[in-house]
Amino acid sequence: MGFAAMQSVTFILYPHMLTSSLTLPLEMLNAADNFSRAQKRNSKQRKHKLTIHLASQEGESIETQVGLSIQANQSLRSLTTTDLLIIPGFWRSPFKHIKEYQQLILTIEKLIRSNPNMMICAVGTGSLLLAESGILDGKAATTHWFYSEQMKKQYPKINWQKDHLITQSGNIYCTGSVNSTADLTIRFIELGFNRTIAKQVESQFSPEIRKDYDNQLFSDRLNQQHADELIAQVQAIIQQKYNEAINYEKLAESMNLNYRTFQRRFKNACELSPLQYQQILRIDNAKMLLKETNLNIQEVAEIVGFIDASHFSRLFKRQTAQSPKDYRLAVKTKLFRPY
Image (cartoon, rainbow, N blue to C red; front, top):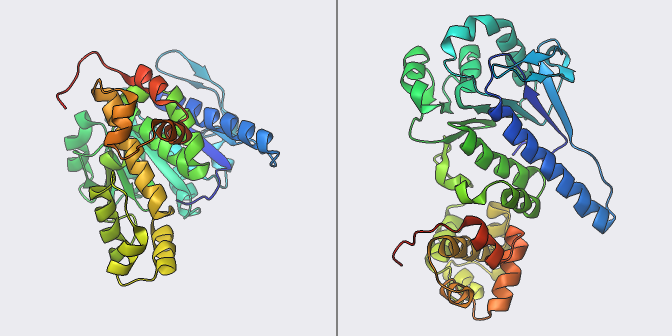
């Protein structure tokens, strides 16, 4: 990720944009900022407000296709930098309007090329604005499924991934829908704020339709999150034995590593300790069980590896900002899948 702490986000405004592809990530990021300032207030840390730019080409007000007028607070042409740039998708077919946006495309291209560490997110058909600029040439990308074949024909230099709802190529992300943009926004919040705040935002924005970010992602780095092959083997072992009591000292020894080196390498690769990694796997599996079965809390705790249901509940709430009971109420469907 290009930022250790998110300072500013810029949303590009244009007349033919799909309004929900702007408003949903905007509200989620604003919620993250509110949670962050509340967290810092409680711990007496220094607070700063996330700067959110709504940027049209010249700073003009934009009348959207649904009749909603949005007043920009920034001229995109005069913007020099931002941590995260979000390009909304088009309302309906983007191809018939592309000639109207050549100047906007040039401005976007200039901003991106002058900020190599800036994160960029193109929502759905918003990827057309990047494709037209040449920014996506040789890179992985996705778009709204309905226009994927036409995009592929018109921009053959791009590695289109129609079967993936999220793609990452370096610092450029594309999504195939508004919902997948919500999932990616949770990821941005986790990296730009912290995991606790990401879980708080997730619990407020329809957790029942949320999909895991990693399950949707196509990365042109072969989906590897790090380059430490030995630690990747360790991750595979933990995934297989996530609900067991793992002796990490013995696991380190089996990998011909002393324990301190093992811990250091794992944290460098995964940004978590081995135990934290295992706990996240346990909670993620518990979420699935709470959603899709009628097992009680104690039974769920035992299946994912906790003897003490109270300890499980405390850890679950720490990771998700909800108790197991509250999470189940939020996501529970009326149909059960055989377990």
